[in-house]
Amino acid sequence: MRDHYFMDVIAGGEARHRGLAESIQEHLGLLLNNRKGMTAHIPDFGLPDIHYVYYSLPQSLEHLGSEIKRTVEKYEPRLAKVEVKLAGTSETTFRATFKITGEVHEDGRVSQLTFQTNVMRDGSAETSVVNPYEH
Image (cartoon, rainbow, N blue to C red; front, side):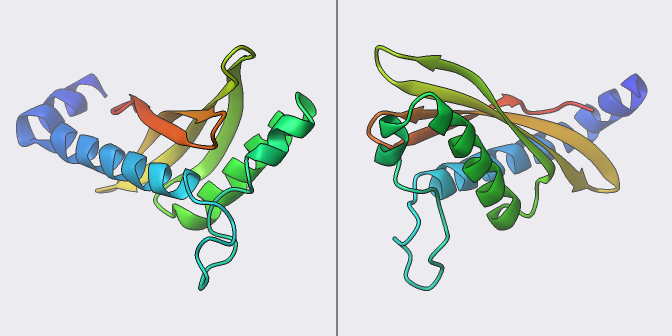
């Protein structure tokens, strides 16, 4: 497997894969910053209104994680076997951090990508790639 990695680097496969991870990251940012009902022709695109999450903390964080998973599974087809886990919270600034993990199939290979999403008090979500290249 290690030789395969070095051959990918030499052939530019890592850069190609990193581009895919960044493309998915960008799409997740768009997806998780939209709210259900904001897109008339796709009414369930996005997450529910985040302000309702604050009224029933901490139980609502589990529901938010489920909604993130449902949304990613439906609207980001490049990620398979999606898992979403609450990774932490900040009570002072209300920030909920979720890890989103999934498999990508590219050029006959299966790789796992992990993203970190911070959902902020104002409902915005910031998504970053945690591991852009992992077998």
